[in-house]
Image (cartoon, rainbow, N blue to C red; front, side, top):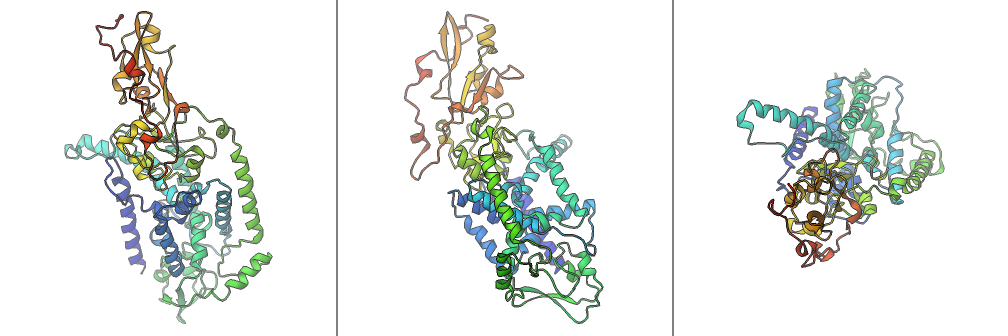
Length: 529
């Protein structure tokens, strides 16, 4: 069984990797978000904040299977679990030791904290949810490294030149720090295996609650010699010193114990859940705050821990809701096109990083402090890194929660990200009267017009045509800070209602300033050279 499980786990992981690298411009697949939608936390939170989708059924199906099969997802499907297994093989991991202290209560604490803060309007799931964590790791760390390696191979082998991982070299502002965070998660395995999955994963805690009713039960025959090898080798610490017992809430059905048993005394069979009879008494003791001894040997989660988690979630929410950066937002905080209004956006976005990976120009980057603590790691457009391409609609197509609403290429002129502003003290035309038309030449929306001032043509921004795509800022020759920059003050973000169109939300007048004043002057028209 262990060999079969590893084959299935490997095939699912390869599918995850295939979909990950397949999700690039142009987007033509409809199943690319499936791993993000496996997680109930990723689906439930947008639902709590008013973004209920059909993909809620996928995560609900996973929970239903967990009721019957226990925490199978953690051992067979979860890409983060597989990544940790691979990482522990490379870095070395430690077997369980007798009397080793466990911290399983922390995962339940985090789950309650996440749910409590969500009930008060704060999304904290992204910090600990394993699907988003793993996808961000592959986006911010693995993908740029793979892109560098692939471009190196292309210089050596001409046959590879027709296939590219990305349109341009990619990098992310938080890539290096995030690599060390994830490395730390893997190195915790040197204390004991799958430390994250055992003690920190809130999704694992949710599966533990539902998995208590699993019909797959561990059986130990009389051939058992009590060698304890199964206990030492169990990657989840699900087998106590009484080798015949096991923690159904910790077991991920990896079948390592079956493989490791020297006398083949261990098997798994369909049987009545052994903890069913103790469920009500255990719940009663938990509510009364009394100690209990459930089969969950690693938990130790008490009523006091529950109340502490609720209180911590409430206090955290109140503090972050008054964050200075949230109340006085950065004018350079440019959100992706069709992003929900800021409050809803921060609540609905799960920070999976899919929009950033699929951004054609690498302009979408994770926030650090620009959106405050509540907006940490949400996507923002940095025009200096890359602009919003006129023909690209991938971020809206790929977003698994609707934080970025779907839109078409024809909608782009009507979606306001912000507004470009010309700094006359640094613009080559305004300051030095040089012959420069770069912003006008690159503007996809004809938002630059020319007005004759004191006998000289000067560039202006047509506020009605400008969408804040950032191409003018990206292409401006003035460095290090462009003479034309985009700010969020002109953004127009709404939640599109059924039947509404972006053209109705932000119609463009038939005649704008660009039509009333001079069009782009030719060199012969310029009164200066």
